[in-house]
Image 1 (cartoon, rainbow over the protein chains, first blue to last red):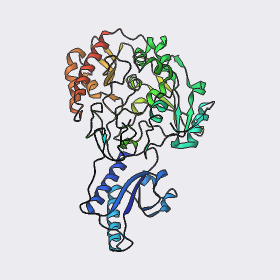
Image 2 (cartoon, each protein chain N blue to C red):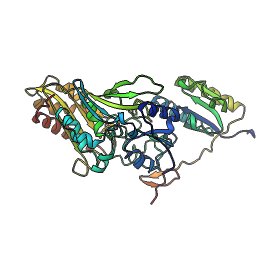
Image 3 (cartoon, helix red, strand yellow):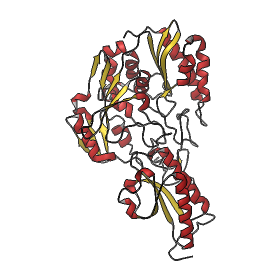
Length: 129
Length: 340
């Protein structure tokens, strides 16, 4: 494996204060696709005003394409309708694999429940006593 | 609570311009009973729900308050308090549905502070959304915790990815009365009117918003048309306290029915506490059109069953909903006609 291989950061962006349900569905589809591929990648959703510092792949809805300085922050920017995004992401992942720039996640990586009812088991769903 | 900047505009345009200048970091403030004493105190934040750092106080804008009755209906300013609405004799005569619902919101203290605009725009009820430690879909998270969690108070109709319920009693009444919202936009643009039928946005369209308003738009007043002749109004609200005030509705029903000799001519039946938006029971209305209401009512109500999608703990709401619709419609028929 290449020494430059690391976790791939994929961010689906949306305008702050609004999240069309159709775009959320697209994000979920991309997230499932990446998970099924077994790649060590983190797919997240964020408003354009709170994007992470490092972005490998920025996925934008057609309404935001080509606007904002955040586009320059991303190594690769994808935009377009949902079906085209899926194809573009496939092609990108294939290319990154060939270049040895992504690695596979641990096959037995465990997932953790964050809460049981109102009892928290993880950091995010913690409840104060 | 975190620090915030309070803006005190002198006019509606100033208020809208302040909202425009600060974008999603700014929120309009009126009574503050939900925004300050709920959302901000409880620090409900997420990537899709930034903590407001600028509050634009609308109570300093005198033109936003007041009740003005005219031939073409009534105009109620967005910062008119619920107490003033409930106590208005003019509203009580022409739109008793509104005054009755306003008089049953929360507690006297909240009605003294709470405003019409604030009641319409309060954030939804869902105890996962209202808990700061749950990064739910409504706050920009990935999942709706109610789907697999305790969902006894969540939506049974119209939920989609997110199962909040709309908490506003007055919002459903305004839909029932065919009211319109008057909205101011930034930059001196002419204000526009939006029917309340089209005002609310459910999670089927957008997961972060509850109305069609942009972050820099402002509800300035509500316009309610005159009540048509031969119209009866009725309102019922059921909650766990066993009395209408003090708590949010498990189910509530607003009915404005125009009938002649018990036959449905026109009208609206709107449900609260069961859906992410004030839910108009169109299937019931359609089934009753031109029919004898008393004899056809049970069959008409059963049409709702096909649309409902209860979750693991909230199927009880269906029975409540059906019973409450029946009682409210019968109550409307037995009540005196509203004199326009």
